[in-house]
Every structure is written in C-alpha cells, then in structure tokens.
Image 1 (cartoon, rainbow, N blue to C red):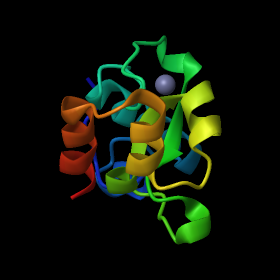
Image 2: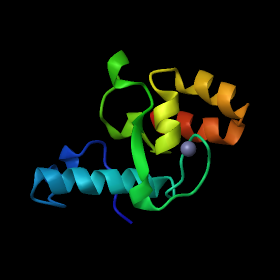
Image 3: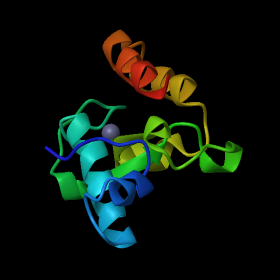
Image 4: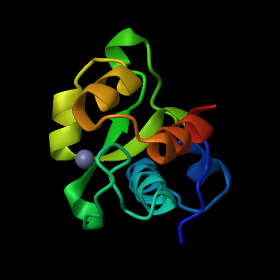
Length: 109
Ligand SMILES: [Zn+2]
C-alpha cells in the first residue's frame, strides 16, 4: 500500500519520490487505495485506473487539492455531482447512505 500523505508535495518532502509528476501519481494511487478502489458516492468497486479523484468541496467553491478534500469517484458520479454539495447530491441520487456519508465525513474532517 502507498502511504497516504496530506498533499502530493509530501511525497517529495518525505523522499518517497524525487519528481513532482511521480509524487502526484503516488498520491492519486494512495487516495484510491485508502478507499479500497471504491467510488465513495455509489459504493461500487473499480479498477484503479477507472477511478477519478473528486474534490469533495468543488474547486470552484474554493476546495483545495489536498488529501482531506479528495476522494475516489467513478467518472459517472464525478460528472453528475458537478459543483453540487456532495451530501445533497448523494441523498438525491442514492438516498440516505449513512455508512458512505460517514466514510466521507471522517476523511474530510
Ligand atoms: Zn460512483
């Protein structure tokens, strides 16, 4: 398992890798592995390369590209969520899923 660090830069600071693109690659992998390569929104498992990383708080609302704001999402969920609040969108789309909501909450807080 790739260690899960707060930002891509931490992979450089900790000398896990020497280049910025490699740091980003490791970071993306670590976030996905942390959630067992499952989309946090629909709950389905995917191949690691089929998953995207979603900004829980959208970039356009000031969401940062840091581990605490990033979760693995399938392309469909990522696209459909868009810039809506994750919980509103999730409840409208999948109903109330306490386990999945808790998983996201504990990651972002
Ligand atoms: Zn999904």
